[in-house]
Image (cartoon, rainbow, N blue to C red; front, side):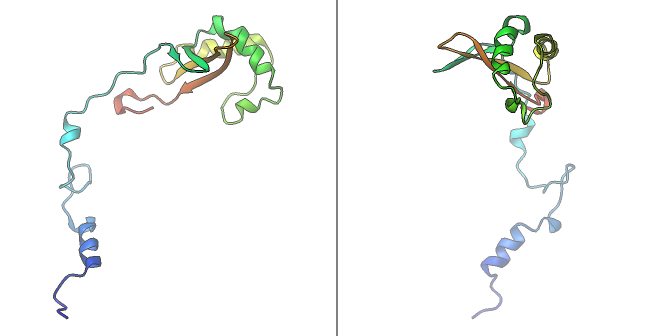
Length: 139
């Protein structure tokens, strides 16, 4: 046995030993490929358009037009369980819901869509793409 040969674990350890590798200005290993990032540009914002599915249609939120249907749908959930993981809670009155819908309708931080049941033609739910950060290309 020749002890001068590197073992597989030693080769693996040296490949990932970032402390001994030169760092670039972003404190990443200098030999990290960055050619793809040099020409990166922010993507466009999500489009406000209607999306057609098999059971629902997702429409851009229009507060006045969707409020009555959404209020009826949300009233069917008296314990407000659909709001369990949201910052908002259920809305006791149509006026409360309308005020909320108006406040989010033109949001630039999120895109709000209404789920319209294709069978009934009525708005049945509200969803969003949140934390839109166009500069960093994230949703």
